[in-house]
Length: 105
Figure 1: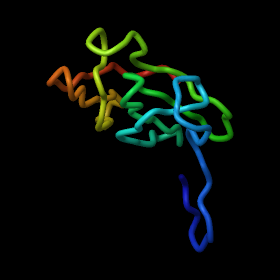
Figure 2 (figure 1 turned 60 degrees about the horizontal axis):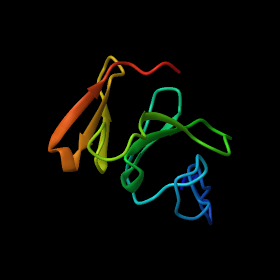
Figure 3 (figure 1 turned 90 degrees about the vertical axis):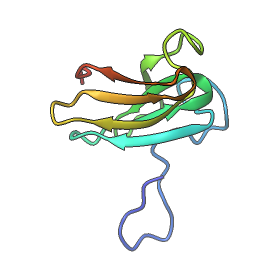
């Protein structure tokens, strides 16, 4: 959720359509980060993927993962960008941190 200053309620910016694996859903989100363009990245833990939402989108897009646990990501958690906009993902059940070169926007 996004909260504007002095707002009484938040705005859903990703997911919010029940638990699942469609592009409109998340399952046990574990981390979120916003890039310099305002795009929202979510570590979608139980779906073993990283999703990206642009402002106003009704569904996200998969930017990393989706091939099941162990193949690419296995319960991703934390997210971070470096100064060159490379994405770092804590790939918790594979016991590693993965770096993804700058994602095309």
